[in-house]
Length: 136
Length: 397
Image (tube, rainbow over all chains, first blue to last red; front, side, top):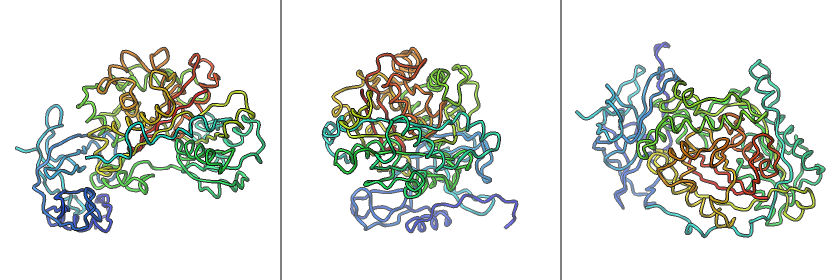
């Protein structure tokens, strides 16, 4: 790899995270859904945090979400993220909260409550990240 | 649905009420060491700072080292090496953060496992260049949320609180200028504290003109990062009365943790830790037989200013949704309704991860705070909510 290309910070890859990141690389993000009580969860884990069932299935998400908070970094901490850049918290239609970034032009005024859809961003080093863009 | 252990007012620990008292406090000269560190020197390592603080606490108590039969090491030093450096072979030992060190000392004393417990903290975080952000952030081994979101560039502790405040101000209608009252008030206190690193008074205008680090948080919303050490000696209540004329008793303890959804930050972003704080408050107030109206001084763990409005609401000092109004109209600075972080806190005095707050509680109750002394101080309330683990501690004379 070109030494000048900033590396995207590596994700935490616990045993249960790998299938999710494989699905992200395939641009079809899947999360765990409990076969017992139907709860979706993020981050992935060894069992359902709602009912402790270990019977989970990997299901594709709808990609629909709503922004519940956002920040703009004015300092650079990471080579892959020159300032300014944003981070958002979204609530997925399936229920879980996820941290990500908003792609494209930011909305006027508060971002909270804006409807967004899942997109897949390819970073300069080839890493694929699930991000979100405003619903047209 | 949330699962809560016991009703709000049960689950307390009435036997621990006034079971133990602080008889000695000590700390390093972090003002001097701040200057030395900025000049490129390395005054001490974490163990050196811990030793200086312990020696000062021992002198303050008038006890001989041999009287110490319990030792709790703070999280930044290894327990065994700290005991070795201090030359203590106790009959009971443990490792904990600031507030839980006090709780565990009380627990061990009440259970008869120890009678005189030293709790000791040293941290060379400034000169060691400890990183509280980044993919390998300090604390990431204990809190997955500190490292899990690094692929999206969200790694700094400040960013977690910036996200919290953005959602909070949307939900409650609080403004950035109202949050600025926290930093302004604490600088007002630190201007009267010769032990504080940052002593120049600031105004809300200064605050609003300061740069954003992670918007919506400004530079003044962030704590210092400096070297230092703090120690306290806690003794069984009757023994404490023999040791000194002004023991400071632990009267109330409450705790409530929010672990569910913690990695995706849900308890911070949707409820602002409120349920945990309310539970911890109820338990500690019931144990102490007192309420927020009985507290003369409030001390809040303030790695970021945002902790303060959350705590004002969570611990019942103002109605939920009115912390901004309280900060603006009632005030937490000198002359304000509720003196809060009277030493200057993490924002302006020193970042000792809650440890310096404990000795400020004791100094206010001893009446030794000089210019910043709160008159007739009888009860002091300390709270922390690090990563949604709410702990409430009430000290009294």
